[in-house]
Image 1 (spheres, rainbow, N blue to C red):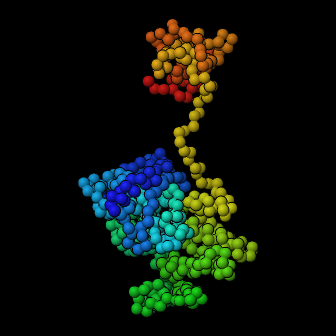
Image 2: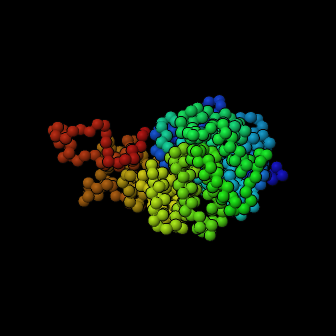
Image 3: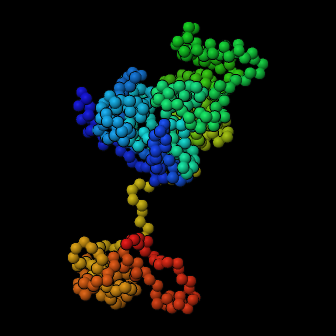
Length: 501
């Protein structure tokens, strides 16, 4: 089975490929704890494309503990195992399993048959973690596909979510949205158990004061101990299966009633409190359980829109400007707007626009899921950076005519073009047409042979010959000698492709 996996992985190694990397990204060795990582060589604007890569995708099983064997086989076949470690057992499947566990991505939701797609990248896996990342990308979930075999992941596009200064490390987040919007103790414990490191990012070291909202409570008029015990008991009875009084609702109407009662009874919790977040998301999921156009979604569109506006304002305050987590609630918001009266829709949109919240969600949707933005007929933002051009840079010099070379070089033996003329200035007279002596030399397929020129010891490349032809005229030279025209610094030419010798 191992040999079969290695053979299969070798055949699929080409399925993962790097499509684009920003020229200002440099892979550097950072320190012993963080290893290597990408660092910006210059200022990167918010919204710039940093990396685009096609992943290797495999079925990691239906259990919480993923099947890592195919990923380990691909690591060996692609050569990534040798790049990530210098251990002598880098070609061993069991040893590579730990590398897969650390570097692989797995969708948070399974496909319809319960299996989870897992992905490995050769370049994106070198991005380190930050709890407040300055880069990130969006991949579609697996819940819309029947199986992993039908899951067709597009290329992973990593964008700058915030402005990245020169010399700053480019980091993404390894956490899901609910975990990223959680207190320090929860984030550090999860990262330690899953990836084996203690996070010391700027946010974890106290660089995000707004994180206090994740556990904030308005204690005015409350007895702290009893209020905290009451809200904790009510929350655990809804969501914690290990709690002795765990009693989840069984029916749809009962679920809505208990969740709404929780919000009313414990309204002293901050909107960003982890308990408020969980209850709000459960309510939104209940309203959209059967789809955007179902009877429940149409009947409950108003309350669902209010909850989504509240959720997006929390994201706006606590997540990076162009976070990919902003895509899903904004798409849900736009779909549900169709089911409310026009006046109510304008009210919800106006509420969302406060503090530029809608603008950043709109930019995030266009950046991370452009097909969805186009399907929803969303106006394209004007303040996002343009998509970078692929391939070789466009030529800006003069365009050559068909014909390949000037007359004297057409019959030159060998591949060298350094036999165009034997004079130090200008083109050979034999290469010019007398009637049009000031034009470029004619490009001709079968020009006359000029042995005296081809055999000269003093010659220049065709590039230099073109540049020499751009010398100033005799009248211009006389004006310069008279001091009426300022002499340029250095040897300048209209030809932009001078070749250094």
